[in-house]
Structures are given as C-alpha cells and as structure tokens.
Image (cartoon, rainbow, N blue to C red; front, side, top):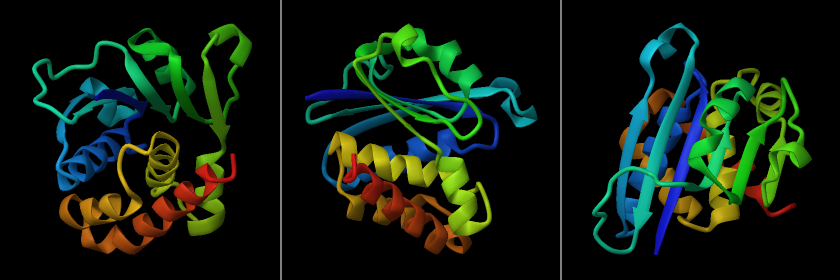
Length: 179
C-alpha cells in the first residue's frame, strides 16, 4: 500500500503543519512516512505545498508521483498544483472564499466544505482550519486513526494550541462521517 497526499494553500494557512501532523500520525501507527514541503515566498502569503507519502513498506521514492488525496485551502494554490493530483482520487477543498467548478476539473470525488467559516464560528479564528480539514481527510481516507492524529499533535504541535487543534480535528472527523 502506498498513498500520496498533497496539501496546498497560502502561507499561514497551515498546509505544511497539517502534512507534518499526518506524517507523524502514520509513524505512530507503524507505517512508513515521508513529508516534504515547498514554500518559497509563502511567508508573504504566496502559495505553499506539502506532500506526504505513506506506505506499509519502505518508501523508495520520497516524492509524490500523482497524489491520491489533495487538500487545498486556496483556489490559486489548487489550480497551481492540480497537475500533481490523480483525478481519480479525492479532492478536499475549503470553499469558504471561492467554490470550484467540479465538472470543469473532472475529478472523481470532490468534497467542498467551508472549513475556514466553520473554524471562525467554532473558535473565533481560522487558525485551526487546517486541523479540521485534516480530521475530515482522516475520516475519508481511513489512512490513520483520529487518536494517532491527536497523539501526533502532542508531539509536533505547540502545547498552547493543543486543545483547540484537537477539538478542530474531531469536528472535521465527525463531518467526514456525515457525507
């Protein structure tokens, strides 16, 4: 089993952190995982991307070929990196600020949800949006358990954000069960 995950957004939206949490959760479960990231001028709000490869055997090639799962928080980032995604896979898109034309993209499975809007409603902040989308991804992909993601947060996250991020993960995971 080899699964490839692509995350994209703008600098500050947490794409890279979400990928790190996912990779660590896979390691917790005894899987092999490799995480990489590209962010260039992202600190100034430009697009970012992060990749995670998860496998039950040794990973010989550490980059994605064509991602099976793509989580995007921003339309510009989505379109920039869409060529790195297998259109027979699953796209998860935060449509708080812009919706996508599903027919134009010709992607097998698309989940659009206003993760940022929900995050503001629940937490008065967009900070945990990435964890909500990651919880949703975990529920859809079944690649790691929610408990492993929570443990991963303890390891790689900041303690002051732990409770909020944990709650956001759980909301996203619950949302995945409603679709």
